[in-house]
Length: 309
Image (cartoon, helix red, strand yellow):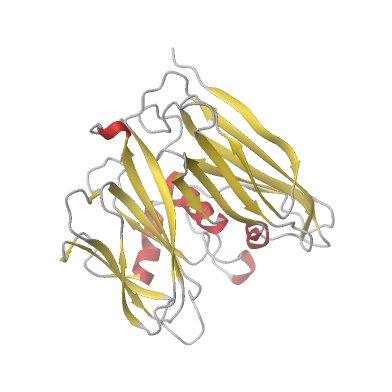
């Protein structure tokens, strides 16, 4: 019989403009639940406004990064990884009505997988750090709650590493080469832009994507952003509204370069042994781009068996 433990790491912590941290449990950890709640200021606090108050979430082992994401990218990761949008409670445009948003901080491609999670650790080895801003103009009296799900006795073969690359504006439109990390299998890339759909223009921040391994096209020889938006049907629970009154598509301004479309490890991008792996971003607009790289890291260098989905 397997055992899991769901426990509170932080309870009703008054939100502040701060950088704070907490140790994670020593048992293997499947995921964390990071929740912000507060009261509407005058009218309904939007998803974008709530996400803006969580500047960054970081998980590190002895200083080595496991997860480092802005809240917008963590929201998008939740959408594409779990094929559902996070729940935003309190859809009422009334002053002081409570709004609640929970985000999953994942260490595997699915929750409660004893083969894919953070391994057991020593006390203080894993730390969660968050960077927040006081949400005063659209959400007030806010608090944070953080919970962890542990799996005592699990012996994972791998864990999911999720790290954000902030790519500066290249100075011109056209191709922009972005090196990817070498050594682990890549599950996918989240690419978030500033410029997405716009009036009287077919251009996006990134118009198209190509992936190169040792200067050979690998999987994505040429993929247009508008076609990659169509790929969301494989990863999300349908379109979130179709007219302006129903709000923008979520996750906003983001596409997913998917190397695990069937959740079976069949098409992962292997980088071990490569001299160079990089993405070629065809920039439609000269602007900064946010890229989250999702990697599978083998624990203690062990070969990872295929998960049973």
